[in-house]
Length: 285
Image (cartoon, rainbow, N blue to C red; front, side, top):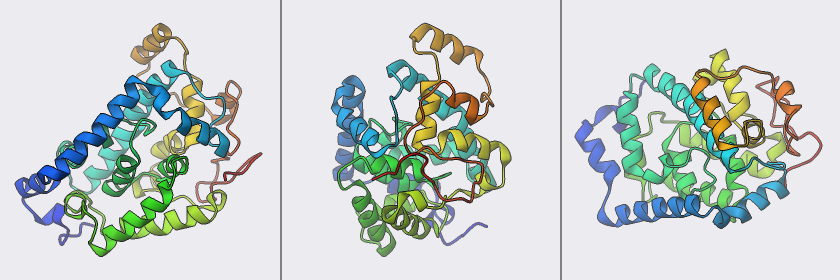
């Protein structure tokens, strides 16, 4: 159902573009966040503490090497993020390309890093608030490894809901679901209380589409995504060869993948999509 009261459906495209572009001060903030991401790509050691924290929380195990990480993120982007989002926005009568442009203008950094590992805290938070997520749990697990990441997300969601957030106008020009931020806030608070008992908050086209639901079981949470990355070729040439030859999502069971990858401490069984995000063999802090 389309809410014609939302700016996304009621305002002219040029007005939406102006809103997402923002003021000069806001543009400076966007440049800073984008520069932060580029600097992390150039020097991954800058985010090593984040990886260590994720290991301590049990969200990642030994972890993929840089080649696996790069090519794994490409698979995530081409097999899950783009097709699943395009399907969803098509159901809302939203042109996906224009939607992507609005997102880019709102915060370029949010589209520079599919995995979020190289992104500034506020870029991850902004991304969560500007996009109705297939399942936000991946980003919540990522923010758990950043000092005050979840607390800041909660605070900014409250500001979005009461209209005091500095990016309220910009994000309001993008979001198409009037209840998304309220649902997300409740989900964040549930996750903060107990990550292992937090029920999934999946988007409609993931719940109703078995194909996307299957792919979400691979890329929808950190332990599963990292496990997939680590299962890929670990040298550049074989990884590139596989990338060029693999045109569709490799539909293999999580069991067969786990035989080659040490699971993270809190990896969970995805067989019941309505079940909480359970921990097997450990518990996230």
